[in-house]
Amino acid sequence: MLSGLVVGYDPGGNGAHGVAELQFENGEVSALSTRTLETAEDVISILERLPSLAALGADTLTCWGTGIGGWRPADRWLRQHYKAVRRSVRAPNALSGSMCLNGMGVLIAARHRFADVLITETHPKVLYWHLSRKKYEYETSKAAMDRMLAGALGISVAPATEHEWDAALSAFAAFKGIVGRWSHDLHTLPTNKGERLITPCGTTHYFWPE
Image (cartoon, rainbow, N blue to C red; front, side):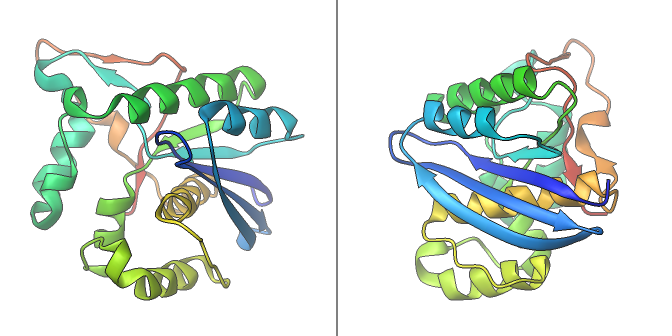
């Protein structure tokens, strides 16, 4: 797919839902807008009004693991490959309810509205480390993080909040997946004995740069 709309979503509590809408044309990013919303319902309302949606990138669990701690192959892989920021990858069973419940709720609603939408999981904190080799410190490094994001997207950006920034990077990851530039899918890694992945919103991906 060379042109379309991608949405990035960073779930949170009340007043902390980051959303990014990324337009791409001829395989390149052409525009990005971001906002912070009050509830997951506000996010779903936006999705339901869209005429089309190519991909959705979300900083949330897009599938669930049934083993110890809820650990999934993708989580273990990230912790192994990014030791400097491995503490950013927490056991799924220890994550906050707003992240898990709001995130999956939006994904299920998006899949109901757009049956064929590509959904990819993201991890902005670890992804930022991969792209910049710097730790994610939004409050003290916002300007540098904005420059990195603008350079990756190839356009000027100005997310107003940390939630919007995470949503924007999530949209970028989904864009890279939908145009085929990131093909390493962490959700295709094999599970361990005695565990499986549960997919409440259908097939999802976890596209990561090589």
